[in-house]
Image 1 (cartoon, rainbow, N blue to C red):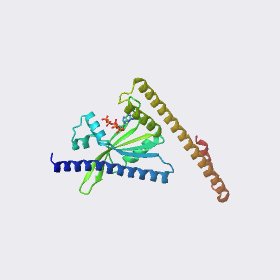
Image 2 (cartoon, helix red, strand yellow):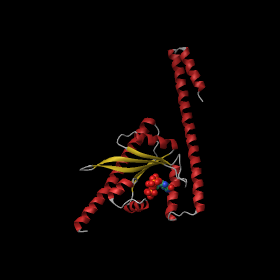
Image 3 (cartoon, protein in one colour):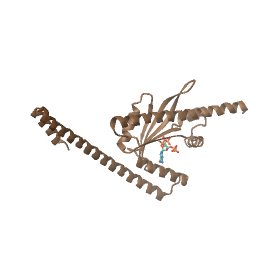
Image 4 (tube, protein in one colour):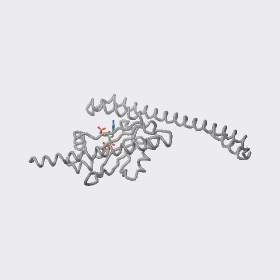
Length: 245
Ligand code: 0O2
């Protein structure tokens, strides 16, 4: 290969990696907008944290070899779909599905696949929701359709996945059987904890809604003394209030 060919190849690789960098930046902005809008309008923030990464060239090559993908840029571009990765951390499992729905409604995001490892955890206990998406990245002379992976998980699921990832690194993907069993058991405890936290949050929201209704009724009562609202109307509200849980 002569110097000019080397230069061309180098430029191609730089452009290749840059499209993924732009894709994660676009995704981060999209998700940040969702987060802020949701916070202002609904007084609740379903997104605790957003992290982004572009896979390193070494890691791309390793994955290509592992999956038998030919070592050419077009083959890697089409078959390795998590070079651009965004991770969204939520407090509650219901928030994961809420965020996923919001993303699926975005017209410029093509959702090719939704891997639900929460409903169907991996045999090792791994839980997360993965969206495989394609988004347009606008370059100076053309538009590139770029694949990316969005992982959505709870804080507890993330805690488990990062420990498991570290252990895999430490044991070169040969974690000893007793540790694997411990990890599976820990994943079950984490799922139970997530379910418990979800229940507490639901009860807290219900309690808050009840308090707000009580305030509203008290205000209505005061208004009635002033405006003399029809009795039927007041008793209907009172019945509604008695029938709540
Ligand atoms: P890294 O270093 O995090 O980037 P598939 O062909 O679809 O079965 P693929 O492409 O690996 O296989 O998809 P999958 O299973 O959805 O996994 C994609 C990414 O999810 C992984 O990327 C991890 O980030 C994460 N993940 C999947 N399974 C596990 C798991 O058991 N434990 C942990 N800690 N993370 C997991 P990479 O490239 O494997 O790794």
